[in-house]
Image (cartoon, rainbow, N blue to C red; front, side, top):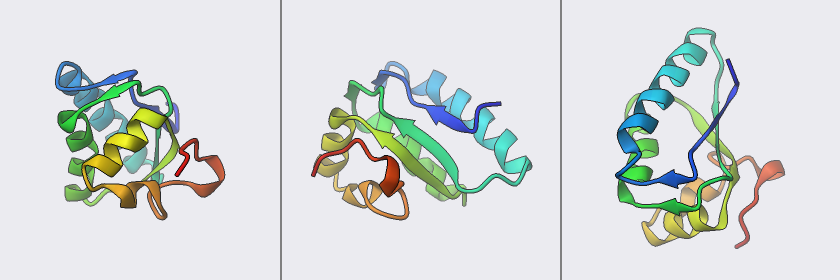
Length: 102
């Protein structure tokens, strides 16, 4: 199993259910192996809406530690717009692998 989850190019309400199922199965498997934090890449995300961001916010309620290892410009802009700037900073975003420009 890949130790990095790649979010889809379209992270919207139209892909939320399928993405959620894949993300939760991946997180469950890696958590069972003791992998922490979970590494999530948003480098391919070209379109994102509130439903897409809600998927990641749900990880916080599940007591899972996760971090972004890559982000696209649209993903970073959506995070800032929705007040989720902290996701683009530590501990969520791996500073050595960021693709976001401030």
